[in-house]
Length: 146
Length: 133
Image (cartoon, rainbow over all chains, first blue to last red; front, side, top):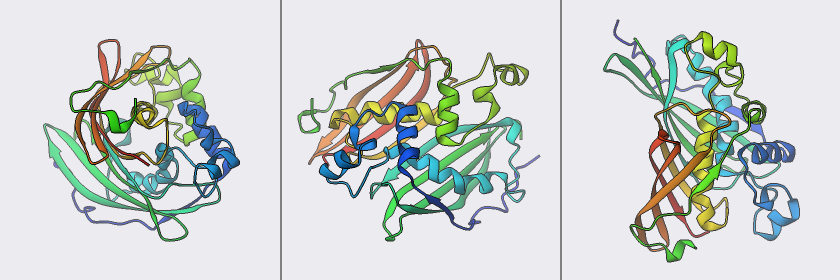
């Protein structure tokens, strides 16, 4: 059965994420990011950040809120039971700090079939309350046995 | 070692980390990814896995950390990171992130990286781009 490609180009409404200090600390602990700028307001400010700052990979926390509806959309038609995370790319710009409000919009960029597998490529663009881009993500999910 | 001193072909210091048995639960809570293949060994076995597997994005975060340690963990240094997930990672096994400098010019450095548990390369063809903050 060929993969459905109707959803290519589809964009989902932006998802909002309010960044908090304890969430940054919890995430930094889980990944082992030891720099005090992720835990201490003063350490972050004296290092030149607006406030307590998230590790770069925190973009998966606010980005996931936009990716969820895209992956679950019946128009895309991903079989979650056989889905694997194939590859991932992020580009980072403005750091994300305590108190930021991040909006992330997801777009379906590509859907194609190769070697009996379906490839689903999504892009997320995240911006903060000042309109500055914080991260761009390219998420490639692979579905076996399409 | 700092970014400015790196030359093409240099190896970066290895990052070694052993996720404990309960790390996937903490990462699930921190990230919001509660997919049962990461936190429920019984469910994981039912779908044909040897046991619950590490979150790919936690492993990617270790590649990010291994790269950013070249800039003392400054979160402004990492400009771009791309990875391919090519194997399953498991709790209670040491993960080693290693890398080689591919490009170094004008304060920007590109590093080819790999993350492995023993011979099992869980992340391959990873590339990190760093710039002095």
